[in-house]
Image (cartoon, rainbow, N blue to C red; front, side, top):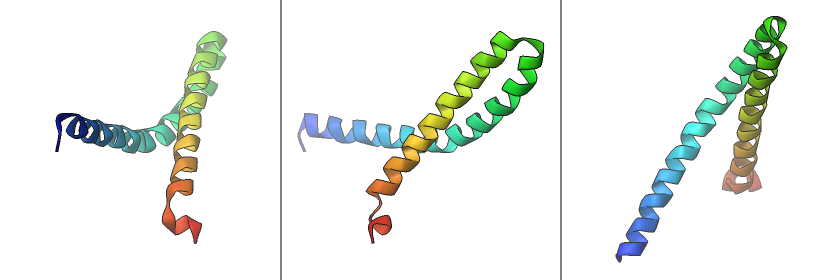
Length: 78
């Protein structure tokens, strides 16, 4: 195995790990931020909007990861 192919394999493993962690964290972060944004917006609407935006981004990441997993899974194709 050459240096660059080993480096590519190592980078692929790191990226796979990041995707796995993101698929675990994103749904929880989305739910927590959604709940917090409602409560915080009663105190300060600007901060509530920022928290809501973070929650929406986390939800978008979760939907994107699920869409990619469904299309790439051989079990879903049958």
